[in-house]
Image (cartoon, rainbow, N blue to C red):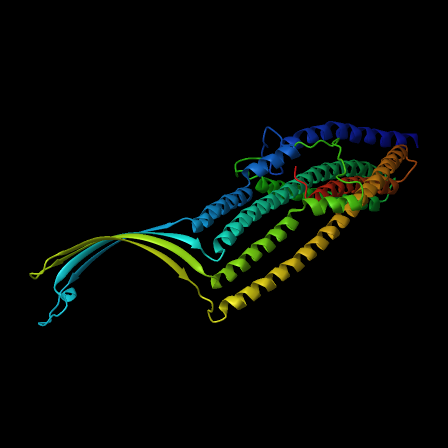
Length: 450
């Protein structure tokens, strides 16, 4: 019996020595290499640095910023409705008459040239100019809010992908540790089976769990690569660039609000979607005024200058005239087949539809905030339970490991303890990731921008 215990302790010593020599080397090399074995960037990115880079280089954000500039030019265009219009024209006419009888000198063979310059100043256009200018200003503000909304979305996407990478790295490490522990158990089980101290069934059970752990390890590598590729897209990384993140596990997160009522009040005040819907309503109202302006009178003042020359091929004297004209013109289209009336009614219905959408948007924001707040509270509870479970699982594994060394407990008990420890470690990682995402989602639901 003493010899058997000595053999068991000797094999355990070899396995332990292998674990302490190989494992540190593995975890020293792993952070320096990507999942494909390519060296990552020398300077790691924190979450704040990722957000700053994404907001600065993401092409989608730049496109929305250009849309704001585009709307600004629309304001300048709308101002043109109040400014005069200058028209320049030149006419050259050559007339050939084959008739033998001509009683009007306007139809004699001739060549004429005329130059004209006219300036038209709108005086009143049924308030269409004012409505058009207001609509252009509302459109620019609308584009600003859209750009702000896209920035908030990008911050959420970057933060989520960042924490997905953190989770992927942690899962990769934990499944690697699980594979190492199962390898150690397999060596011990193989020694026991060889000495006929344990049935071969125990070795097969460990092989099954080892195969599952290796499959989970491979899946973790793939998930990490996908999350990293997604974050590189948000940050507009070049294909030749590699990304490495700098994650501080001791980072403390401050809850953005204390209770649901405060969260809802903050969200209704800050959410950009509310302002976007309201601007849509204002733009629609200005469009209704533009439709009404079609039936109102229009007044214009026009000043023109004409230089006219006409040369006859017959013995008629040539003509040359130079004259000015000033015209005050008032026009009105009170009836256009009912098109304006029905267009105005259609626009009023569209405004009412947008008002209902605004009410729906408000309710959706309240529901979103309540959901995210409860998810955050659930994340805290789940994290506390995961911490306790991990402490107990580690203690149980240590007890089972020491007992198996002296042959007090069976290999089956050691395997069960290892599986519980792995499950507790994975639960801890998952609960921590859920808590981080709950923070990100709640901040997005409140309309906050970093």
